[in-house]
Length: 439
Image (tube, rainbow, N blue to C red):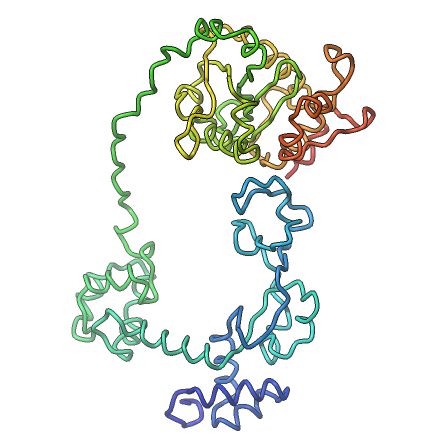
């Protein structure tokens, strides 16, 4: 290595020596002497080329090592319709799938041997930190790939690149443009200002676009919106068409609406009410629009399978913009019709009165004007459990959940993770959501 007078780079034989030294618990100095390199070179080699997985080292599978796991309420990360909290999943996929995954780096990785090769804590159930292994064969491939990529696509030697960084980077940080720098240093630089800007774009030099004058002052032109998609005609889906249905179908029709949060915010709660049962399904929408309404209906269908068409045969809703395309709601992912949608007359919310009455109960927990931004999909299980465990006079002081189970909706109740609470446990006040709002 250069710092010992040795010109050769670390090769596969050296890397095998390093692995054996780690297995023997040798010091970095002893390993370095064996391969004729400096201790700093060995440490740099291990840190640069260690990997999170290696077939040469067995590890405990399905570990959830997220720092947020204990209080996490996320569900549905694997998109299979499951409503269970992901932290309880035996598959242990949180580490790979969750965008909010936060690992706790192991402090031992900052000390020799800088890897988990001989650490006893990785056996059994494993530790609570990400693994890092030094595998000589994988390290060799990583090093070769790094050397290849660093030389690919640029007509410039390593020495020339170092000289460019040495001359240009400090001057750019002083606010000078590449053209200004080249005007006074052209004889010392082997590339043009334009090529230098290309190197900046590619991340080859020690400067980013933000540092370059002018480049960060121009915003990309916004494309004009294309022609807006027109909603299909409501013909055949009006309230008068709904009234023409047999009385039995009208009585069983599910009433659909949205509960909004603070004015100007985009999240909402989609509600679907079974009037005869006063049972209300709550689905959190990240945006109150047609796409997210469809996704919520798709999720319910994935929970119920073939029984969806029977339970949600007819849906009655208002003319809100999020519902205006009835075809998105009526047809599932496979293109097969799953329900029929009908619309109330304008300004006639009383035509779906059961839904509105249930909203009044929900507003006791979420007062009008409450922000919904901190809510998550899994919070709907808590809200739905309390709301649907509340004893109703119209149901002879029984709960919507118990009536839903008797009516054959048990699969839906379980899929939504709704729990039947004891009467004294039911909370219908805003303090039920105080922990959510405090996030």
